[in-house]
Image 1: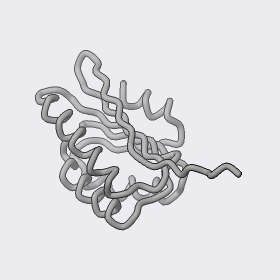
Image 2: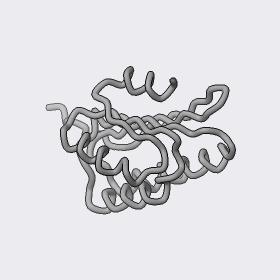
Image 3: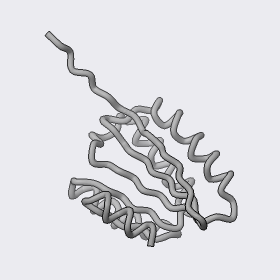
Length: 128
């Protein structure tokens, strides 16, 4: 009998256009503290290297299943630390609570934040 593997983690793609850095983050499964210990230093380094450039963020939560307690705390700390780092943030999800959370948190962010149900629409909004 095959064992079902429960994958979890955060994948990151850092892309560049003429005027900006575009970071895409995909959240997979139920995130753990160890996922953030890998993810946060990568984002910190990318933001440090991007000084003077516009930085946009796309977060894909369509395969996200939630957080373990410490990971939820890590996520909140990350959001507070980087709330002024992004010019535009597009969040892609498929749950109502994700949309509500994005709408509530958008008031705390320096840049524009918007929720989408489709990655293509989110990407189009970010790149215009």
